[in-house]
Image 1 (cartoon, helix red, strand yellow):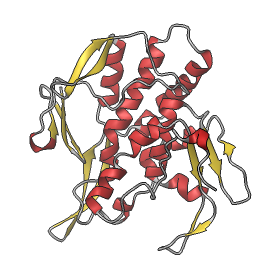
Image 2: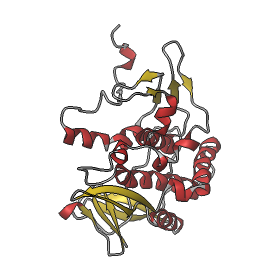
Image 3: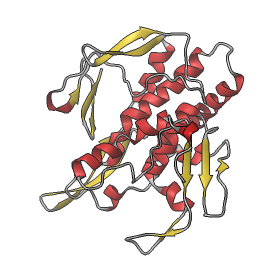
Image 4: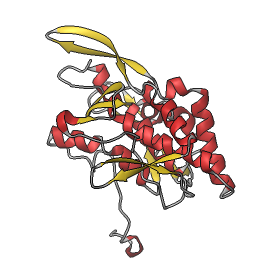
Length: 279
């Protein structure tokens, strides 16, 4: 029917259709950009009707959608920054889109309990688990939320209540929402190996301590690293259109050798994109 002229400046990102499928390397990069797209969107629409799976003898529906780690991750990346006011759900052709319930995020917060194809395939021919690629974006979004609550002085009471609802749920289940380690099964030289791998370690505790001390984060454009900054008056406002930059972690600098992010020594964390050394 054509595109409504009033929507000429609207951009739509649709899962699968907006991810290149022909080139595996490009596809992988696009998948790892999900956090940025989801957190920057004004609206988030879940389309999950009952549908036969194309490859497996299974039916896809809202339940299977909610069990997938990447599906939980995209919901959390959006709702942690924007709240749930702009989230809608469609489960059938005849069913209208309906707003999600305000506590919809509670199950989705448990991102790392979700199902992953890479884990089902035991990471054969893979260098890392998909869990590791979500550490940085989720840590950054959590930092925004925590700073929003810590610096709140008046402002929008409903927005602050939404922020605190997230933080309270995280506080109750922190070890599950942000696991310090996880067990990864891989194949090396035709041998199946299961090992404990660092995920968040103590990064959440460090983030809270950093913000509570009155130090924030800013991007050092010239050095492509991060700078510590004094706390500002602005903070995350759920449902607002002006957002803080996310995905930044404190540290003294960034080096691009061997795809590693380095600080002044300390905890070393293996990630999908390299190694983070936290002081």
